[in-house]
Amino acid sequence: MMDVIIKGGVVVTQNKKREIVDIDIGIKDGLIVKLGEHLSNAKSVIRAENYIITPAYLNGHIHFGEYYLRGYKERLGTEEYISAGEKFCRFFEEELEAIRTSSIDNVMCESIKNGTLTFFGMRGWPRVQRFGVNAFLGYPLMNSEKLAGYLKDFEKQFDSLKQGKDTEYFLALHSLKWLSERELEAVRIFMQSHPDVKLSLHICETKKEIQYITDKYNMSPICLMDKFDLLNEKTLLVHCNYLSEEDRELIKRSGASVAVCHSSNLKLGNVPCDVKALLEKGINVMAATDGPATSDSLSLLDAIRVSALVSGAAVQDLYDMITVNPAKYMGINTGSIQAGNIADLLLYDRNDLCFTYRNSVLENLVYLPGCRPAKILKSGKVIVDNYRYTDNVEVPVLQEKKAYNKLNRGQDGYA
Image 1 (tube, rainbow, N blue to C red):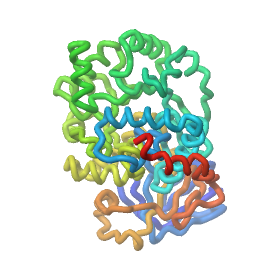
Image 2 (tube, rainbow, N blue to C red):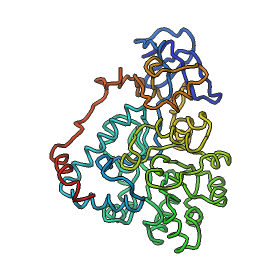
Image 3 (tube, rainbow, N blue to C red):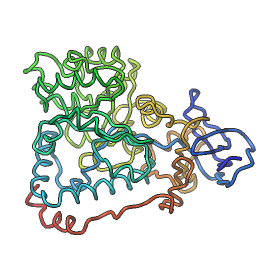
Image 4 (cartoon, rainbow, N blue to C red):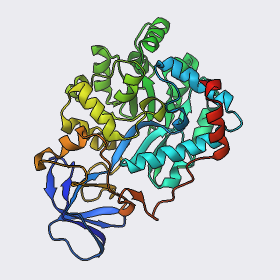
């Protein structure tokens, strides 16, 4: 007997054929076990005749601790934004942990309600795991005031992190600009001794960053990654706004993946990554929200809508960038609705969202602003129903009053 059957929905499978079909979904022990017509024999049934059913989304790059930097100041460049973040940490030193904890809670609650159940993001432990999601959490390496402590004996610190059933840790370099040559060599040695560990970094995000690396090493950031043997199928390159043809060829040959954050880069004044040029080379590309401070929206549909308007990429390619493509890089059995995959599913109400033609479901999802799933299932359990959290998910308190009050009083002091 199955635990749950979802009956009567229009299913966006994201399988190899990218089929959109009327089919029932059978779920047992948190996994999709059967797809077919007229399924029966289950403990419970979800009637889905008025729903579009899609895989839950995977966010390829997110900062969890920046919720309270959202909207504090506009028209900042990337370097100015990093500097402002350092000032923020100094100004709120006493309340910083409370702010960070509350920020993670807000980011997670908002992201989940927008359909994201797999996160590839900076730090976040152990708070992120409270939400029962699929978590890839980055150990940060950055020679800055805020994060310098992570550099000391980082090999031992990383190895001490507790792996979990739904948690995997990766090495997160902020960027090549924020690490010395000696530190890069240490990263190279570490990655050679940890061949299963993933590596991610911001790269080719700004012209200033590229100029700095070119002046220092007489090569592009992508070529520098190749020189230190850090460019391979375990590598995720974030942003990639300013790539040469040589850079793209190196990425293609290495098997590395790319995460694009078009909303964030437009706000920061950068030229967004040329997605079509990467896709034409067969590079695995995913979309990401980046942090709420720079992107504002934590909806991946918002993210690919901006990418659609900027790049002109096909809607199927864009939808792949928040489903099957990140699942491929992360090595996780989600991102498509197939037997054996985790039952992480989104149900969109066709009436509420004014879906039009059956053959334009993806166009509606990508281009209609404000799309949110009415129901969300995590591992086969309903955690959002009628746009509200159910008892199956613990929703932490979203604000820490003392920290929040000081944020309001001190805005002029850190901005």
